[in-house]
Length: 242
Image (tube, rainbow, N blue to C red; front, side, top):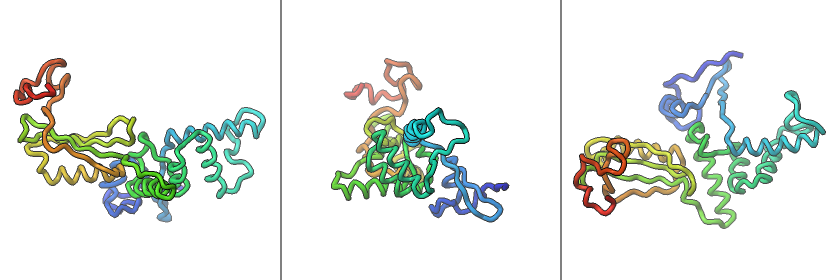
């Protein structure tokens, strides 16, 4: 059956209420419509789900008594409704957080730092809501992650020419960043909207921001040599961080 791509100006199939070009298309999420108008989506497998599937396939070797072959069923003798339960058991065996397993059972997703940019905003919101629901029911403290931060930079303490929005998925992850530049960028309403959208797309639970500029907008090793001070921002030369 042939498939036709969703139009750029069509409503996004994820249900966000925005146009496809302003929503899932930016995330390279492949929504397609068949000739009957049925919408399907292609989602890459996350590292966590791949790990769970690897553990499950190791168990299947015992079931078949040999190495797996291409035409072997991954869930032999199982009804379709039992597959999710089997996957949940495999996730438990590899030590995945029970809150994440519950979110998988509720949404059918496994979200990670690697694959979250390919998951729709609506699905991400449902995923994080399921995690919070589990933690609330279990009497566990709610998590601050994903955590959003906003840092301001400028040539002095009064003029902000650079804003860096960062997202931490957890305490160990590398930040996902977006940088914005301009005169008084901290007062730019368009930038503010983009930061809010950036945080919303990644399901940010809590955000913090600097009270003012915390340093020079130029980057050591990129805009000036490593070990030097920025020749364009003498104001910061005598500050404690320098």
